[in-house]
Length: 418
Ligand code: NAD
Image (cartoon, rainbow, N blue to C red; front, side, top):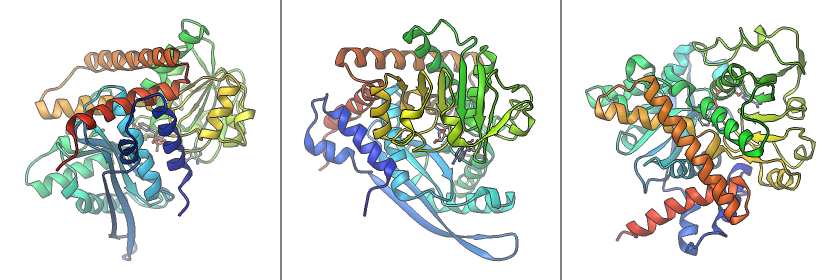
């Protein structure tokens, strides 16, 4: 079977990084595989009284440094290969920001746009039941990803807790605050996109702040919508933003005020944006801007559009939005890329804070979460830049070198059992 594009990209980035490391061939072979792959087909009662069979996945790429961690995605195109690639990214991401977690990913092949809330709840509860033997605070800890949100995490936590006979908030992160969620978790991924953009802008000498810089964001959900809010509050001009259907554009800056008030719906309401042009997602990516932030799905920047991008900096909010062919084109064109495993690591980082608070039965203040997140993202950014300069590689390769090396070293120290 031909490898899916996203898995091919993940392997290519891994191979590139390992050229700069002293790594055993056998270990590299092992790192390309996922440790555990769970595939389930399960029934869900639909509102019209029928029963539908859904397919779900939970893939653990690596658990050397600690319990595995990764989002749950609900998407009609989700498949095993994509889940493998996304799980692998989580391993490097956790190691890059020095969080003692391994990498995992999961989800269900489904279209949430055509399902009622009751059907989604039935699906979530049954999927949780199917994977329950393999998740848990010391084993594997799910979180939200595309088309899942705090409400879905609440159903997962409740189902798991019923099975255990007591409340187990630490089995998932990204929960509602009332159930042991952490302050700052909802905003964390968008915030790390913003923080790494600020650092990159300073590093490139584009300025000391984002004031007046033009930003284009693909996706307006948890990551894109929250990042838009941080950019807007920092005085940047969001000139373009989109959702799965279409984009909005105004070269002088969109009036985002009403659209950004979306916390309860988990997605920006683009219909509130007036005085703008409607454009396609393809057109959006090619808009002239200072910073382009793909924050939706994978493979959006590819060999056919990379030469047409008109940004000065690309910051990856989504996981794997850039194919390796496009990455080469952008490098040749001198457009720096802040890679996904750095730019969107805030979600994983605050998920770790949430887990620590749950395990210790403590509540951290917003200031503590915010201060620690900022420190971790800034530190990781500067480590990446320093490796990139030392080894004369692009930021993505440097980030991979740091992440992969930490995982590989830990695996070598633990050895092979038996
Ligand atoms: P979300 O479901 O909250 O929002 C997704 C957004 O993308 C929505 O605006 C949706 O309309 C848009 N979209 C969907 N399909 C699209 C398409 N084909 N073209 C253009 N836009 C499309 O999801 P999210 O949590 O914001 O995740 C977005 C990306 O960020 C994903 O790649 C995810 O893996 C990654 N990510 C999320 C987190 C997190 O904490 N939520 C953490 C790290 C990485």
